[in-house]
Length: 137
Length: 297
Image (cartoon, rainbow over all chains, first blue to last red; front, side, top):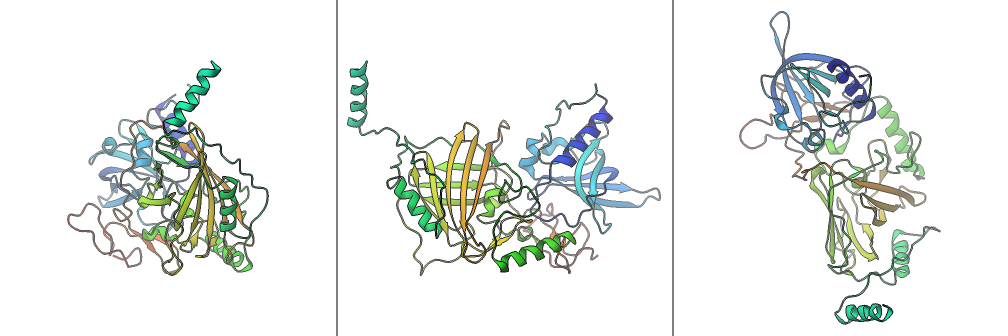
C-alpha cells in the first residue's frame, strides 16, 4: 500500500471511529470540515490535559502565522506510539485538523504527516505507529 | 487420597487459613426504597461479608480502561439517557440537549474541576485498582481522582460531619471476590456531557468484580430522590490495557489548559499571543487562570 493511501486510511479510520478524549466540549471545532496546514514545527507540548503541536506557517507574502493543534494527552499518545521525540522543532509537517468555527488559527488535530512521508495519527484508539492497515497492497 | 485431602483441609484450618468464601450469588430481582436498603440486603445475603485477608484478596493488578463510550448506561441505544428522571431534571436535561444542538456547551472539567463520582465511572484514561484488606483505592489517571472504599467495618461519616464530596464517602465489604460499595455524600454533577444531572442527594450501590483475566465489571444502582423517579441500574466494563511499559503518571489539568467560557456560555480557547493565554513553556510559576474572552489581542 502506498504511503499516501496508508495515510488516507489511517485518517479515515481514526477520524470516523474514535472520538477525541477531552476535558472540554468540542463546540469550538467545526467537525464537518477538515483543514490541511503545512509549516514548520515550533513546539510539541507533550502535556496534560492535552498535547499541543505549534506550527509556524508562512504565507506567500511572507507573513507568518502561528497555528496551534490540540491533541490527546501523553498516555493516550504513548498508546498510539507517539512519543515526545516523535516530532521536533524545525520539522516540516502537514497537519490535518478540524478547524475552529471562529476562523482563528487552531484546530483539533487528526494527524501529522512528516516531510519523509510518515503519518502520525493523534486520535484515541488509533493503531500504533507502524501498524499494517487493511486495504489494497 | 481422600484421607490425605481431609488432612490437608485440617492442616489449613489449623494453620489459621480458611478456604475462599463463596459469593452470595446476588440477583437483581426487585427494587429497594433506597441505596442503603439495597446495600444492607446485599450484606445480609453475604452473611455479613467475607473476612478479607492479604492472601484472599483477588488479583486486580494492571492498568485498565473504561469500555462502552460516554453514556452512563453503556446499553443506551438512542441519543437520550435511559434514566427515568423526575420532571424537573427531565426539563433541565431537555434544555441542555437543546443548547448542545445549538453549539452551546460548557463542561465544568474545562475549568480543571474533578469529574467526581459517579461520572468517574465512565471517564476515559487509565485506571488502577489497589486492594488492601481494610481499604481499596480506585484510581483514575484523569485529574488524579482516587476513590477510597473502606472495608474495615466502619460506617459512613456522621451526618453532622458530612458534606458534599467529589468522590463521595464510600464504605464496603467483600462478598467472595466481589467488592460491594455504598457511596453517599456526593457533590451534585452531571453523568457526562450528553447525559443528565444528579443532585447531592444521590447515592449508589456497586458490585465490582473481575469477570475474566482482562475484564472487570461494575454493576451500579444510582438512587437520587431529586433527579431519579426510579433507581438507575447500569453495568460498566473495564478492560486491561496491554501497552508494554505504560504507567500512570500524575495528570495535571492546570499544566496546559487555555479553555475559556464564552459570553454565550459555550467553550473556546485562548491561543498564543492572546490576552490571558498561559504559555506552558514559560519559566516560573503558572500565571493566573484566563479570564478574558477568546480572540482578545
